[in-house]
Length: 198
Image (cartoon, rainbow, N blue to C red):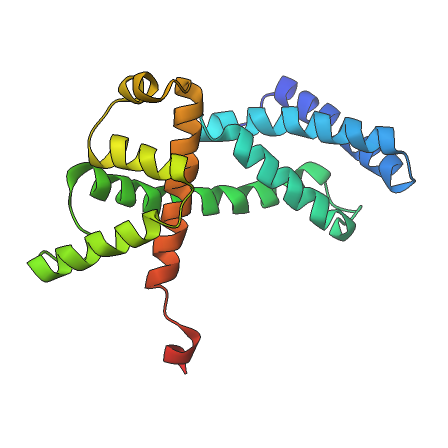
């Protein structure tokens, strides 16, 4: 149930965002910048409630949602509440995020435990390991090294920091990007080709 104070605050947000967006459609660039800043703050709050305790990806997700809002802003219907329209975009992006997160978790599990993707025979394990090595070879060198050290050899982030001199934040960010890229490559390699579908 929405409390009266929450409803009032929501109405204030709605009116402020709509007013800024309207002014931006009239050519006011400063109003559009203000709209994006206010929207980013609002989305951070919205996502924090839905992603807790997984808060590391909020900034990336806010950027994705804001880009989608920017690209689709001409389709917004002024007869509809702006926040409802934004929430629909946010829910769509959240659904994509959770789908990717579950695939990513499966890849992490495979790399962390040595379990292979499909099947348990020696041939299947060898094929899966070769696929991973091939895909790793396509990543930037820094990401390759971190995935091998941390995910395959079991080094900690602190140990990787000591070996490389890179900050822990830089290591985590690069590892995260590498794992996402590796996940995308693995999904693409297992997707049915257009020729096999015909």
